[in-house]
Structure formats: C-alpha cells, structure tokens
Length: 195
Image 1: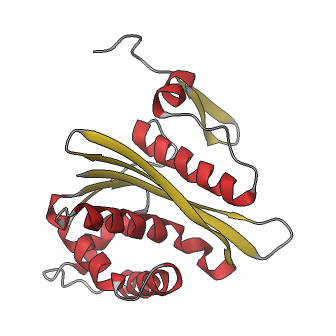
Image 2 (image 1 turned 30 degrees about the horizontal axis):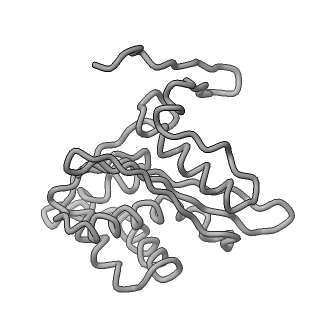
C-alpha cells in the first residue's frame, strides 16, 4: 500500500480556533482511492497537530483494509512524521528531545480526535512502515493532490468549499504553485494521450 498524506489548518475568522483537515491518496491492489476529512473549530493549541491527524487517519484506513504496517509506504511533507521511525527505532541510541515531544503530540492527537488506544498503533506504524519525505508545495503530483483534498475538506468545514475536481479534471487543469511571495511556476500535464 502506498499512501500520500497531508494535513492543513486555517484560523476561523473572528475566533481563536482553527479548522483542521487532511487528505489521502491511497494506492492499493491496483486501485487508487482518495479520502479527505477534518475537524471544525479546534482549539488553537491543536492547530499544529494537523499533520498527525492526517497520519492517524491514514493508519486507520490501512488498519481497516487489513494491511500490515510493514507493507505500507508513506509519502508526506512533514519532517516529524517522516523521521519518527528512525527516532523511535530500538537501535537508535541518540537521545533527542524530538522523541518525547512527538510522543506527547501523538498521544494528544489520539485523545483529542480519535481514541487513546490508537496511540500504540501509531507508534507501531511509525517504526514498521516506510516513509519518504517529499518537498511540500513542489511538483510532486500526488503530494499536490493531497494538499488539494485537504484544502477541499477545509473549505467544506468553513462553508466556502472549493470547486470539486476529480483527479483527471484537476490534472488537466494544470496548477500554479507559489514557491515564494515573488516567484511562481506553472505545471501542466505532460501527457496528452494515454500511455
């Protein structure tokens, strides 16, 4: 199973709360599935947990599908999620404050959004699955797609949804990705016919 995962958060105007959202693109058994969701008006403290909420949602999806964690490859743009496996590995003797901080945030994520019992599954998955860090907001197609799915979910939560585009329509549209406030590049689908 290959899972692209991304989370996002945006402040609700006039409040000190955030809408947080997530998107997944799952490739499994020659099928591709897209999923998205989120939580409305979450306390400000939890806005930084959006990537962990996305990861936990992906783990729940894989668990429901009966896929062993060893058989999952995650692609995400979050530094902590992608490095957690090496931080938590039993042979890693290097002490790091990141381990304790991430474990605390994982437990808080489980308690706030899921169930405390999910915590052990998340730790197990972080150690057993494979993770590849992709650069966020770059031209990695499925990473851009999960970012779109997360934005779409957040739009639904705020009552101002984006126009829904299935993968083919979204890909054919091309997209503009900003790399800095003064710089931008446009990517268009490179293929005009099926391969």
